Image (cartoon, rainbow, N blue to C red):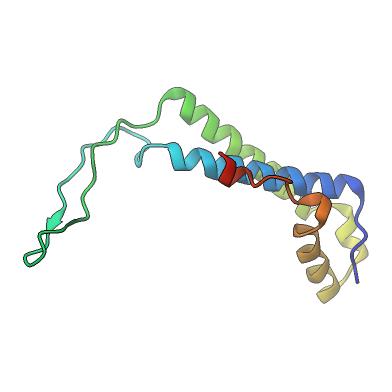
Length: 120
């Protein structure tokens, strides 16, 4: 088992999980288009009358939303790099490195206590 990890690596993995969940939660609240765009009508099914497809107009993102998206994307990238390039990985080789990486993702101290994506 490869599973003893430096605390700073565990902390970085935890923060990565949190940042990704924050980003995903934010994305679920955003309009479908970054820029304002007109919508389009859906297609009416000839037998059922059900309307499928189509979109309501998008107001686009506010400046605050654009800023927050960029901040969270940069944070996720920064934390991904910190985790993936951590010196700890040089102590492992081959399949042991891969196994340890998977273990870290599910390490009890690296998983948020509350699922931020669901709670948001």
